[in-house]
Image (tube, rainbow over all chains, first blue to last red):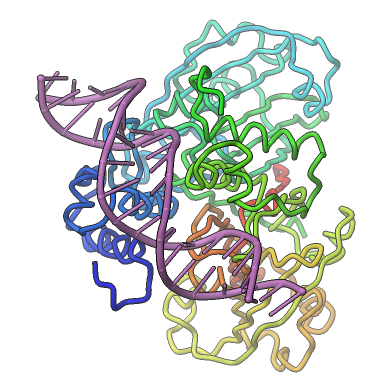
Length: 241
Length: 241
DNA sequence: AAGTGGTCTAGACCACGTG
DNA sequence: ACGTGGTCTAGACCACTTT
């Protein structure tokens, strides 16, 4: 690499790789050359090549898939956690394909922290649902949902691969009145990372949505673990003034 | 390090360091031992020690300050970008101190991308304000604000180190009616990273807020670049049903 | 079997921050 | 001047995926 520049070598490599992506030479989901190949090409160590790749990963330009290689990250989708229209149709409106997969569903005793958040007594039964969602066949998000069985008895008999809120509205006449939403970047815990086929400890975006009805009764607690580069949160808020 | 465990060494080190933080042996803002000291202590290379530290940084447990060392991250504050109550009082309510510093303020021709976002003609004059905000004397966020001078002529003569929206409300009788908010993780560009005394390319959380009044006229565009570990976004949305 | 990333060693020099 | 993190080299072995 050029040593006249004072910008660190790994950032110079980053720039050249970023160029290939931003100029469209490498397209979305395309595989990058192997690390050893890059290090030879730029006359640097594999460590340095990796440093450039990790940097691009942090920026969201590329992602890695287990031990298969590095790939160009597709465009972010927009996502509005305050709305409950179907995920699939919402994503498809933006020109992507989407799919939901139910990983497990069962009736359990409410976990303590959920009880506390939801404002319901400890030991109450709740439905727990795990789902995985894909955008263009790439797993982008794991969802953990806790539902109040009082409001939607027998919901586990339905297919949960479609819009949950469509089901809640049409079958149970439920409507969320108030939503408390929390959002922050966080690394993905092992189980979630595995389910998304990324490394443990990679960056994610955590979204928690707590819904109550008009009487202040607990409806749903939804936890979402997103790949950090897969989306943008977009919310519109109108004053009630 | 123990080689019987199959968990990678750097994660074992991470666990031990994380323990010291979570059990309160190391307190918020406390400096960690030097990298060379850690590598000796755990009988590992400095590279591996750094891997553990970078992991903890990604998790938000520690942060680095230029070449001074690694420090324990203080607790996240809550932040509601949909509200315009003063930042300082909002943070102080949570038991932290806060401070705002105006880095620059001027009247400029609107940048093209701002014009597009705000829906105003290219070339229109706008006020541009850069501010830096501290929580417990730690710089946590850089803010770029674009204001429509039509609505708040002469605002640059005021001190902007206090709540901007307090000023807009009391002096100019302005009230935001609709806010479009975008949130996503992104690495901090060089200038912003410098201003926050962190490394170029470190993870941040980007928040954009676009405010219009009841007539659909552009009021404010606000861009915020946060340290990724400094806060949680907390929004409440109530149905207007 | 071959190729890929994941982890790790044992050094080195540099740039910057702090005394 | 010294201690700190920031960068970089030149290898090695392992675990998993793909062919």
